[in-house]
Length: 414
Length: 165
Ligand code: FES
Ligand SMILES: [Fe+2]
Image 1 (tube, each protein chain N blue to C red):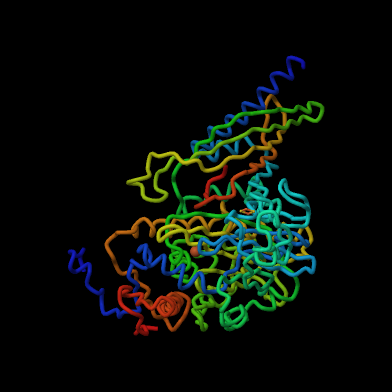
Image 2: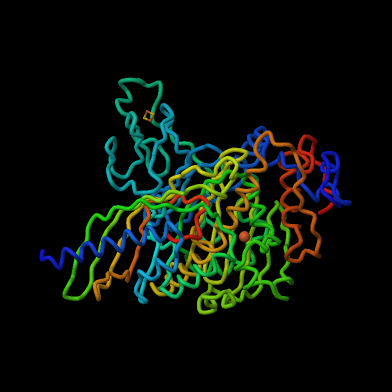
């Protein structure tokens, strides 16, 4: 068909059915974005960091979920706990640094405490209020430190030592149950011995967080990656399956990557993870937007923090084994960087891709259909991963992804 | 410092400045000509977030050459990177025919096609800040780069880059 006029452009292309596209307003509408924070991000488990980022008692790490500041601390009992990083007095952010230790004294407070710099209230590693400056002078017996503990948050350390936090006290299940088996494919690899983060960088991109998750969920875009075309496109690659799990999670099954086909790159068979065959590549797309990607010698994890309908922060981590020798670690770092580093071959291409989508879907842009209607018996270029995700998204939002101003209806095309 | 030493300090500075002009022009071959075949090139950073020294990119001479030759096969943000550099210190080790230098850099992206060129092209965005820690081999009146570590302060790298810094 030649280029289309406006009416033809708005018609359903071919005989695709609802569920084989989404309406671009899910990526651009400010009300939908606000609703996603309330109905999804404040309700589900979100990984905020890795346990190796706070290795010692009194170590902490700060983060945020759906605009709510979060602090994660390791107690004297080695337990990792999470709290709202908000002072119960007058709402100051208690800890401003990204990471550090409470062992040392702070200008406003004593060692071994979290101290709010503003008026010097102090809290212990379990979130109890330990001291109110001139407490009785001002509050007599109307307010005691027992009344002003921190807001405790649900927190679990699972799946290779990631620290998961949930803003919802009533969350019906732990992370394990919520994952519904989607981590089984790399379970032995990441849970046999402790892992350690060796890479961190972040990106703030003018695009919707789901467009990043889509890119992590569809492999059809390997056409964009010269590296993946030459190291991947073979019979084994086209036999990879996309597998849906309950709660909107997806696995992309493995195959043997031929890294040596990219000039200047070497095979990664020398180094792997426990029980994980060399040069394999498994991918977990975790609802509502996190990604765990084990490519032979390195584990990558993407954590998204939506900042607006058209803005997202993505934190990129690379992990190896804590027991790595310096030589092994160096190999993992090289392998990780060559593809996924900020100067690597693929990550830059992926980010240009979603930034380009973001530019055509600004808030207020004309709604259009964004297709994910490829069916190939769930093999690698089948877009079932995205369809599976959006069906779950529709349930949480009670909106139809294909027509988000209507209530959710089971998709016709899953 | 003797007259010969002074010349050599200038030679080292000259190599640093020329390397930046050549990189600004994406003249990768020209840049590699300033390098010794034993070049060790890396982009590194310290992350206070994870409290760790990190390597973001590293290659030897041949690895870098191959990678730069393959650039046209990749989809790339073509916004040129423009470097502003000051050489802060040069230390000569004439006995061993070696030198080292520390330079600070600021790298701007001169926007072209990275996001939405209708709006963004022609604009400059601050991309990176950091320092070059360079080591040189001195022979036949030249200072050739043996080691370049571009150590970044920036860790929010947004789209990143296929180019070297
Ligand atoms: S706001 Fe924290 S002590 Fe006052
Ligand atoms: Fe990709």
